[in-house]
Image 1 (cartoon, rainbow, N blue to C red):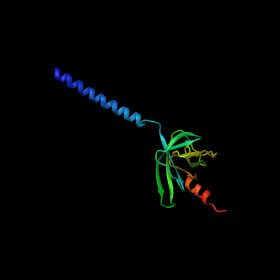
Image 2: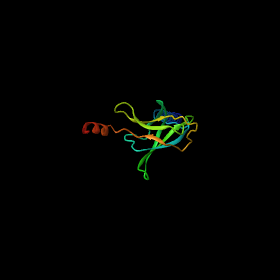
Image 3: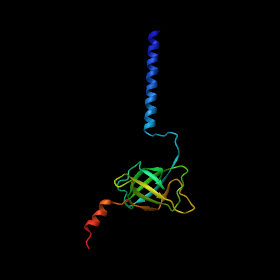
Image 4: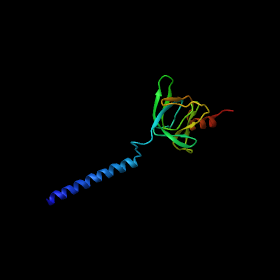
Length: 148
């Protein structure tokens, strides 16, 4: 009888330990099972140099979503960026999506400048106006080797 109680206690301790480990993993991994809903929008860019999946999407400096997927549009040879935007954040149809850099050598992110149109993008909508990433090496090369 005593051995059964000891084995039961050890089993309960191990199960609680695994549950605690799973809870800490979910919290530190910033995984949200029942978190706020999102909807997808996309935009095509000529160049997204340095932009990665998971990059922040901001409006007026406020994070409103993240880059969920990046593909190459084979027809136009442009980068097609899919963004998950928090439910409740409305993006007008004439908004402009730009690839920006956080700081001088920081990570790339998508900045959305809201437009003034009364209509908003729905799930699966596409931002038509875009500004590609600025290639710093190309700019410096033009400045240094520019002939007068």
